[in-house]
Image 1 (spheres, rainbow, N blue to C red):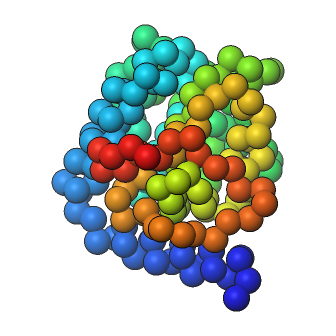
Image 2: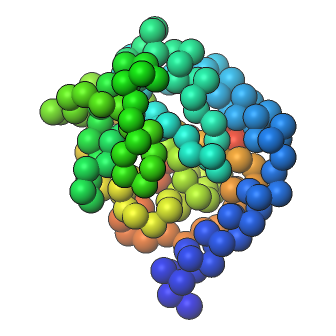
Length: 184
């Protein structure tokens, strides 16, 4: 069975699992994960954080971003063609629907990414040892290798954790994976 087929099959399984989560479970797991992140030394030391503006089926990031945007420099991805630009988050009023209907920051993209010291990475599935599988567009696969000084933190719901997931050579391993208030 090809890796591509395995990934497609796993994405469907995860989609079904996430549909079973209640709103309360989604909120509780989101709060737990970001509370755990805030306690880590890597977060406490970080000054320039690349996060993501969550979609309805992802771990909720909006509260976390707004909580920290005045104390740390928060950046969000903006899809431009088949690439991702990293743009400073300047508040909800600076956000507009972009590619795929996702709210994205408007403004000038960073020309270099060397200041980013922490990246909060979404994914479809993770393993406790850091393997990550995304949605299949390759946007993070192209972006993450450019963030050479950043600690990569994968965040997800508990139902997105597996012992083994299909990985390919270009898949970037996370330094830390956080789910349901647990850190690996």
